[in-house]
Image (cartoon, rainbow, N blue to C red):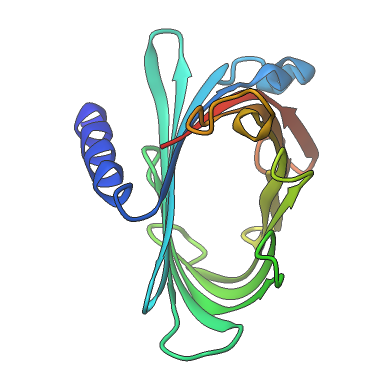
Length: 224
């Protein structure tokens, strides 16, 4: 089943890549060694990420694969659709998140987007109603934020998101990322779309019960 999901994801993203932005990321999660409770966590995560716009709004798709030893231990996927049939900074987000560990959520709510005149900076804020499938607590409010800053003539990109919601207590996750884009440097081919960087996965009451946790990674990213 996981191999089928991987194949379908690659085919889907390959089709979208003709019209939008697609990237592949390889993360080494060395931060798991910082906490006794997370030492058995996956050392490697690969990510397929797609984003694009059309005249009715925008799309975002993300699929994570966590690896333990010689197999995929967990798959997580996220599908977002921003609906906007009008002008202005407000859109409506429809979102589905799920995983191979029987975790499924649906969200809906308004999004406010700020895009700088140069289009090198972007900020969004979304307030959503969250519905949990197959959980004792069916619904809760959720706040989601996103940021992107293109710096130093596109040599450095700061990008990330945060989510906060209530599910048997306060939950929080944020993943700030920093990328150095090699093709923005003099002497590097413009179509050499490799970026070097990483992220810090900051959580509360997710990886550690009732506690904060920060898992840094080092990573490579290739834009197609």
